[in-house]
Amino acid sequence: MPRRNPTILEGNRFKIGLFGTNCSCGRVATKVAQRWDGSWESNLKLAQMADEVGIECIVPIGRWKGYGEETNFQGSTFETIIWACGLLAHTRNLTVFGTVHAPLIHPVLAAKQAVTADHVGQGRFGLNIVCGWNEDEFNMFGARQQEHDVRYEYGQEWWEIIRRPWSGEGPFDYEGRFFKLKGVIGAPRPWGDRNPVMMNAGSSPAGRRFAIRNSDLHFDTRLDPANAAARIRETKELARQHGHEIQVFTTGTVICRPTRKKAEDYLIMWRSRTRTAAQLIASPD
Image (tube, rainbow, N blue to C red):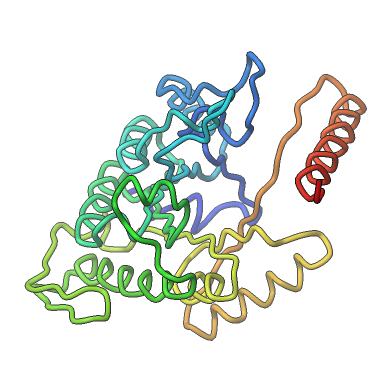
């Protein structure tokens, strides 16, 4: 029988994932001809290539609206749970995450969506929880952003509710600050009766506490070479105090050029342009 999220819970200590392929342009706002188109055909081909070479996971961005202007960066996107179902049906080993904005999707619905994707992939689905993000996107749903730290209090209730039908409990009532639910029940349980791995990218103090308390993977965007080892050790130790192990992921960008020198030259040029743009934005003029 296949194992639960084997590429994440087992395998290589150093793990590699792909991020943001469900969006046009991916993670780069550009007009170059070879930019990522974000089509289903491209997503499927890339996921199958990643599956074949042993990349551990692929993580989508929960995006509902592009950034406009000339590039309309991430203007065309796929909803992440359905996207994950499709990729899981066409791969064999890869862990495929779905990214869910907790304030926009009711936890009873999210629990059922996740279980469905998990059975499609026979235990290879993962859930990436986002507790708050883009105000313009929330306005599309008529939803109000909570105050920053309150978002994670909301997320805590949301996550507690999801795990209860996953555990086979029910019917149950839930009386919390944000949710008041009656007779909640859900079947089937996740594939193999073990929960999908959960990722969270909270980076503020409240967000990091939420991730350490609840998640299997902390996507930490505040790692740098100067503090990475100490911060990762601290994250792992704090998670153990909550009774579980945690992995730490962070971001990386690949620059592809015919030679190392050309790649380094491009990086120097890119950094120079980025600094110039930041200075213009910061200028009082």
